[in-house]
Image (cartoon, rainbow, N blue to C red; front, side, top):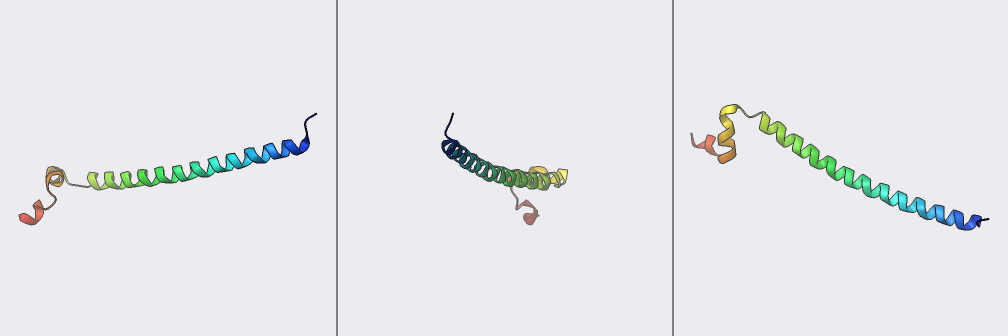
Length: 67
C-alpha cells in the first residue's frame, strides 16, 4: 500500500503546479483581452469615418487643416 504522506506531498505539488498554470493563463487571457479591446476601438474609429475621408485619413491626417 502506498504511503499516505507521500500521496499528500504529491497532491500538494500537483496543486501548486496547477495553480501556477491557472495564474499564468489568467495573465495571458488578460493580455489578449486588452489587445482585442484595443483592436475593437481602432476598428470602430475606422468604421465611423465618412467614406470621402477614408483615403485622406490613410495618407495624411493633416489634409483637413490645409483646406
